[in-house]
Length: 294
Image (cartoon, rainbow, N blue to C red):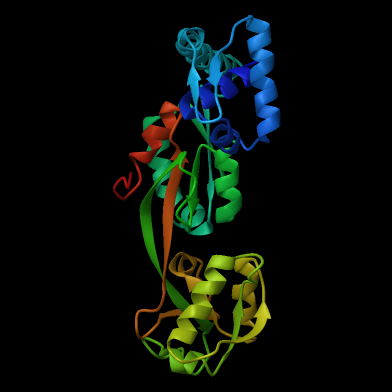
């Protein structure tokens, strides 16, 4: 009997639907069904009653369910204990997501959390929203920060940050002396923004902002990394619209100004799995702003 089989059994027992369980585990349904049959063959009992309309647990399945949960919890505890003995920390909390969170929101949050939970090791990775949600569903992340509300019913989410978009422009630009910059003036200038293939949400926010005000953005350059975009702005190749967190990276030849009408806003949500959640992940959520949205 393998832990993988127990996780599959648990998913089917909680969903009472092979298709939803397969979707939850990102497996093909035939492969999931084969694993369940293999587990039943090994145990010598039927765990599920299957009809064309419904799936239910047999009495054997109902008896097996708490034992399977306990076994999985014990396996996770054993792994944590082994890591602790090896000096790797009692738990590894894997956090990932968009740069507004990893570079803007998280530094202070992680510092406070580590002060109170020194035994928990935290690994932070920057990634875009869609890959972060995929990694969360596949258990490669424990907590994800994304710009899109998750559609997966097995994920929970809440809003943590609303961030304005600001203008980055060369320090010697004609608009640099203004306290705020009107969109009509920006529309006259070439822009340097991320490619849609790299940052689709931000790309669409910028385009929608211009078009909703009767302008078409003049995209002269596309660059994917923030430091490259700001370097292009410093070189005078164009202006850029960036999330406000980028303003923390100051340089003498670039200034940041708010948009006159307040500009577009981008949102950040924290997302976590609704089942099999580590206690350290739940504790980490308490250090974040925002109210639960479930």
